[in-house]
Length: 231
Image (tube, rainbow, N blue to C red; front, side):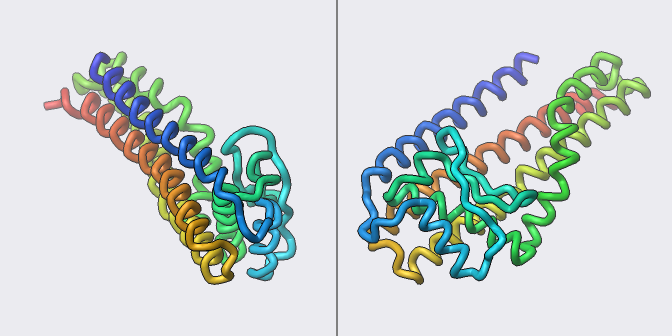
């Protein structure tokens, strides 16, 4: 178990460093005010209109960096700091979330795949580690039948969460690419503002990359615990 705790600690440290860097970037680019004077909400509404999307609402949601697109009720949810602010960071986040709405409207295949996994992952991700651990306690590493299959079931659950993490990567990167292309092609931002938006979204994407790598590392670790002890 000591190896597991070391792995989790290392992943948590890297995640914290990336998250801290992301917050620092957004704080910095929040000081780069948009020359067009548009708020994050106005940016989002214009991008939706430019893509012919009329059935998605832009709403304000509490919290910091709590921005997200909800495909169930078709809402672009912008945190208070993004919804009302008029800076490069707000423009980047607002356009990125609308990028997800555009993906939804165009039936982007990676988003469709991720959406199908949500119900499964929401149920299994929280219990997978305990199921694997339970299987090991029942003798999975020694090749005992029942414990082994319990552990394998846990690994399958964990594998679904890992798959979800990696499917999320193209979804997030594509949304950022759509956002940046629109900001540039529509001349919504100056060159300096664009550079800030691009840098901010790069760091946001890295949080998903770290999460995916961490999920894979955890899966490999437990896989070795289950299969490594078998002849």
